[in-house]
Length: 208
View 1 (cartoon, rainbow, N blue to C red):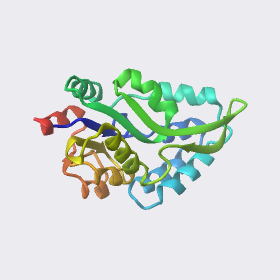
View 2: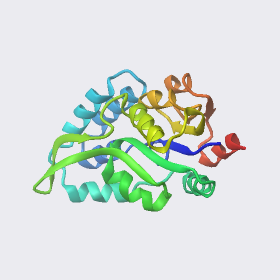
View 3: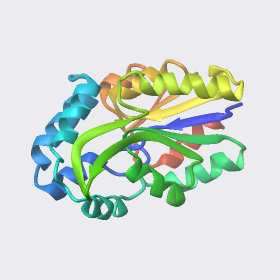
View 4: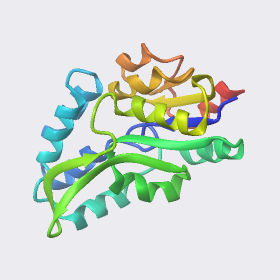
């Protein structure tokens, strides 16, 4: 009986990577995308890659950030999946190595209960190139998952996780049901289930 489901955000619940979209709008898309791809494959330390990518956004206006985030799209079937999970009494949370600027407004669209992510530091209406928050390190998702399990009084057997990249490995270690969704090969090796069809409703078949 699943009681808690933790989702990755970028390229899982939504189409694409928020930081790649921000970088594209700011004219540093190619450079940031290369770093993102290497990080998701586990070729770069996540913390170092995050710091480096965010530094390239220094000087981007907050208004432009908001505009980009407002155009993000849910993955096919995400709204329906989350709605069904909540009908079953499952708490649904998002763990994102990305940013609250994206996860907070998307909560109203997709319907998850809460998100844990990072904050883009701003000053005088522009990004400073600095970042802080709850999901800064490769082990952050796994540690936060354990905190929620203790808070809710539930076990790994009652926990499901869904993700696509290397920084999801540590949360997979603390959930009996771990689903690699259209994922990088490095994460598939740690998953209990793999789904390669880009429709999140496929996840419901695992719960049947």
